[in-house]
Length: 156
Ligand SMILES: *[C@@H]1O[C@H](CO)[C@@H](O)[C@H](O)[C@H]1NC(C)=O
Image (cartoon, rainbow, N blue to C red):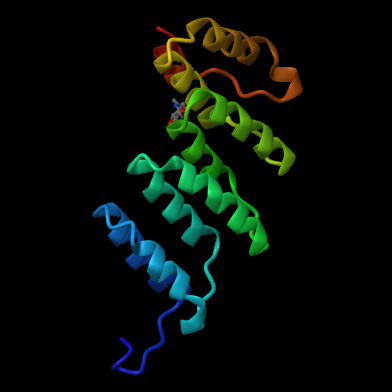
């Protein structure tokens, strides 16, 4: 592209970063860092792709660090980024992230709740998971998502 005189866009970089992450090449981060000098600012998707890459390779803590970097770049983390981190984290981290999500004005959805329940069940904290499950059944009025088939399957 560059030789042909066609300037890459943020979208072009996102595709490359995504491809590298899928192959487990988390040095995609270097490419990400070079974007501004090529005239492309990372957007929420660039961050989301890197976060997912880190989570897939058990580096969720690096993903959480990216949340702060997003805010420094004045890009608000979206629900997908939070849900990705919540579903791959440990139980305490998951609960802290749900709290942060609410502080950012994002409402946890059924993906968030199912991720919390899944993380708790895997950690053997089934009672805590069933408390959240009960909240989902009775607290629709306060805006909690309803349990769906995935929720029931997780609890079973
Ligand atoms: C239930 O929620 C999960 C997210 O945890 C979602 O992937 C799935 O599509 C939902 N199922 C239905 C039937 O809505």
